[in-house]
Image: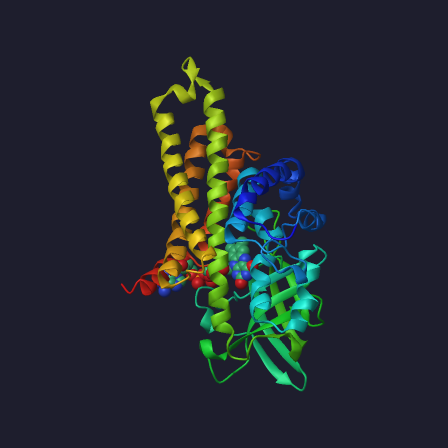
Amino acid sequence: MSTVDTADLAMIEEAAKRFALTEIRPHLEAWEEAGEFPRDLYRKLAGMGWLGLGYPEELGGTPAPWAAKIALSRTLSHYTGSGGVMAGAFSHSIGLPPILNHGSEELKRRVIPDVLAGAKISALGITEPCCGSDVSGLRTTARREGDHYVVDGEKVFITSGMRADWITAAVRTDPHNKGAGGISMLAIPGHAPGLSRAPLKKMGWLCSDTAQLRFDGVQVPVENLIGEEGKGFRIIMTNFNGERVSMAAMALGMSECCYDEALAWARERKTFGTSLVNHQAIRHKLVDMRMRIESTRAWLTSVSDRADAGQTDAQWVAEVCMLKNHATQAMQFCADQAVQILGGMGFMRGAASERVYREVKVAMIGGGAEEIMKELASRQLGI
Ligand SMILES: Cc1cc2nc3c(=O)[nH]c(=O)nc-3n(C[C@H](O)[C@H](O)[C@H](O)COP(=O)(O)OP(=O)(O)OC[C@H]3O[C@@H](n4cnc5c(N)ncnc54)[C@H](O)[C@@H]3O)c2cc1C
C-alpha cells in the first residue's frame, strides 16, 4: 500500500471489522482473564499495515489522512468492544509521535521501523505519582553526565509499561526550573539497567498492561533526547491532541458496540409476551443512544476533516477537548443504557456492555481528564 485516501475508508472498515471478529473477539475473555494479550497481536496488526498507518513510507509506514486512522480506531473499537486491546496494541500511537515529529533522523530510524513492524513496543511515560493533570510539576530528573543523561524518578499508570522496548518519557533536565520550562523528552530503552517495573491491577482494560516504572540511575545516551532540551512541555501538549481525537474515535466505537448488543438483545428477549423492543421505554432508550452516537460521529468527522485540511487552530484544539468529553459521555450513557436493557445479563462477565461499562472511567480520565478538557477548551475559546 502506498498512500491511503478517503476512498479506501470503506475497505479499512470492512477489513477492521473482519479482523476484530476473527482475531480478537473470540479470544478476548481469555485475554482479559490472563491480564494480557499475546505479543503476536502486534505482528498481526503490523501485517495488516495498521500500526504504520499515517507514518512515512521510509520508516515503514503508510501515509494516511486522519480520517483513515479514525476509521480504523473506531471500527476496531466497535467490533472488539475492548479498550484494553486498543490501548495496549496502539500504545505506540502516543509513544511515537514525539519521536516522529521532533526526534533526530538517526533516532527515528533506530526506534520507529521496528515498532511499526510489530517487533518492538512503544509506550508514553508522562504521568507520575505526584502529578498527572499537572504535567508541569513532574519530578523525574535527567542530569547530564558526559554523553549520557542519568535518569532518576518514577512513572505511574503507563500503558504497555511492562512490555515496552521504548519509553518516550518526560523528564526534568533543569533542576532549577520547577515548571514547564525545565522539562525535556527522552527515548528510554525499556530494558536499560536501573529501570524496574511493576504491573498494576485495574477496574477495566484488563488485558492491557499498565505499569509503575522506577528509574534508579538509568543511563540514556544524549542522542536519545527528543527535540531540544527544555522544550518537552510543548511536545507533550501537542501530542495530546492526537491522543484525544483517537480516544473520541474509540469512545464512539464502544458506544456503537453497546448499541448493537442492546438492540440485538431487545429483539431477542421476550417479556410480558412480546419482544423487549416492542416496549416503548426500551425503544426510546435505543433512540437516546443513537442520538449521542450520531452527534459524536458528525463532530468527529468535522474535527478530522479540518485536521486533514491543516486547520488546527485554537478553535480546533478547543473542539478536540470538548469532543473528547462529548464522546466519552456518550460512551458512558450508552454503556449504562445497554446494561439496563440487558438486565441481569448485562451484569455478567462476557457481555460487551459490561466490559465497556467498566472501561468508561478511564476514557473520561486518561489523556486529559474531563475537568482539564473543559479548562483547556475555555482558555482556547477565550472565555
Ligand atoms: C489505565 C490507565 C492508563 C494510562 N496510561 C497512561 C500512559 O500510557 N502514559 C501516561 O503518561 N499516563 C497514562 N495514564 C495516566 C492518565 O493520563 C492520568 O491518570 C490522567 O491524566 C489524570 O491524572 P491523575 O490520575 O494524576 O489525576 P489528578 O491530576 O490527580 O486529578 C484527579 C482528579 O482531579 C481533577 N482535577 C485535577 N486538577 C483539577 C483542576 N485544576 N480543576 C478541577 N479538577 C481538577 C482531575 O480532572 C481528576 O478528575 C493512564 C491512566 C490510566 C488509569
